[in-house]
Amino acid sequence: MLELQGGKFDHADRLFSSIPYSWQLASETGGMQDVKELIPEFFYSSHFLTNVNRFNFHRTEDDIAIDDVVLPRWAYGDPERFIRLHREALESTYVSQNLHNWIDLIFGYKQRGDAAVEALNVFYYLTYEGAEDLEAIEDEIEKQAKIAHINNFGQVYFLFFFSFFVSKI
Image 1 (cartoon, one colour):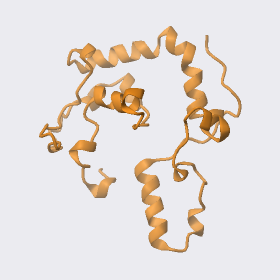
Image 2: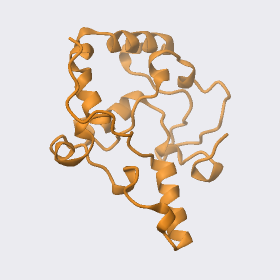
Image 3: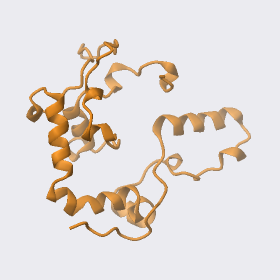
Image 4: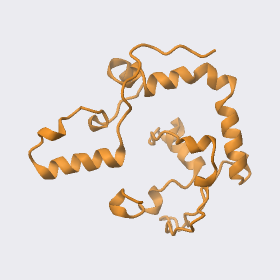
């Protein structure tokens, strides 16, 4: 059931429709504008990459129809190949040697405070659970607006680790 964006699909230009474009927005070349985490399906199921229900996601401002997700060139248009290679990368030595850095950012000590600032890992204040006591807000419109913001943009995970996480390798 569609619950966000007033029960409708968002504008076509804001929908997830291209892995290369999403990577560009998330990487330094795109100014690191997009901070979404990958869902588990990126590593085991290709079904989310194809529009099997033939939903009409409309067209972008550039008149591009949004349909199946655009894959990187190295996937050769094959969602199964994309998932297989993505999983192989996740299980690689490089990832094993560096995964602890991601854990520190998402679940650990680089999530908040000076370490987060130094790691460029700071977000809007409502992103942090407990940053504001929503029950104490008397203005119902303000309260609902903040709840909608949290529901639409999410919150960071609970802090699990208070010191650095040790490398697997």
